Image (cartoon, rainbow, N blue to C red):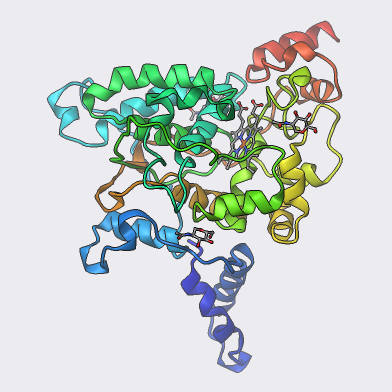
Length: 399
Ligand code: HEM
Ligand SMILES: *[C@@H]1O[C@H](CO)[C@@H](O)[C@H](O)[C@H]1NC(C)=O
Ligand SMILES: *[C@@H]1O[C@H](CO)[C@@H](O)[C@H](O)[C@H]1NC(C)=O
Ligand SMILES: *[C@@H]1O[C@H](CO)[C@@H](O)[C@H](O)[C@H]1NC(C)=O
């Protein structure tokens, strides 16, 4: 959608005298200007995995698309959807004949588990987004293994303190693995599909192109590669750069905290959210991290530091009012994340059409109770905000 090709022609087009303007050019110019403001990319975009060595002539259509996404010339979002009912059961011959059929069944099941009765995404969904990050990010340009390889759940990696808070989604994901691995689903793919399905189940979340075919690894990844909430910006920026993730993309990725409700940063405030709209994939997180949100909102030290550092602040500021910009950049940065350590990118298959539709608008039906909760009332709601019925029940007792 927004491309670097467009960007590089911006300067040229902008210098065309208005006497040469043609009808319709205004729209094109506006689009180009929008693309320029949407994607001011000074970041170098590195290739990863097998795409580093394969020649263009060797690339499959998936390989070409993923190369373009990694280089920032193609969008990582897609509305392509298959609303048909999958053929037969997951073990039928008809289903086995279609490589995405299995994933359709997985998607139905994940979507149902991730959607709260409030219409917001729930804690399993938030866990799935974080689990995708914590499997994939255990990789750097100096490690020879690790990455999006399923090892977080196939080994004892999950018991490392980095992964505090992920036990519920870990149990759920292992159940899905036990059910679907015999039909060919790798743990690595289940985890990354889980992250993308969870993201789009969250209202306003991007619909990220989704690929399968990653290989599992039963070896625990190296330690020391996940960020700590007390790390300095220098440390965070270096840590992510060694994963080929530039500061711009880091700023986009931490926006996932828009859905979050922390448990372990401050255990006395278990369930307190990182913006006033947990379970909604909006940009409130960016503005509230630099502003004065309601008292219930707990800001992470790492987010505060990133919001103010000269290397990350300009992008942070742009996301404050830029939902479309953020969704676009998150989708592309997360696609890179989901491919770290994957050395058969050219052989992956695309199953984007199995994802549920995205929701581009959302209103909390229970806002009046949420507001009271955000002001510090109803502590007991901290682990129930996924569920609108609970909140609605409460309001009737408060008048
Ligand atoms: C600067 C880097 C980051 C740091 C220091 C960081 C740290 C944390 C911490 C401490 C929590 C709370 C865990 C708990 O107490 O339960 C958390 C939650 C979360 N993080 Fe991050 N994170 C970072 C980047 C990311 C990225 C890149 C993603 C995804 C792409 C992500 C997704 C999430 C999500 C979805 C949650 C909410 C989990 C839940 O509500 O259960 N984080 N993060
Ligand atoms: C999630 O639930 C809401 C409210 O019940 C519903 O409107 C929405 O369509 C559901 N989303 C998906 C992807 O099923
Ligand atoms: C981060 O720093 C705070 C304040 O010094 C401290 O209370 C907390 O335990 C630290 N957290 C971690 C994970 O080291
Ligand atoms: C790894 O990435 C870091 C940060 O970009 C860079 O300084 C370093 O040279 C890279 N190392 C290798 C082996 O590519």
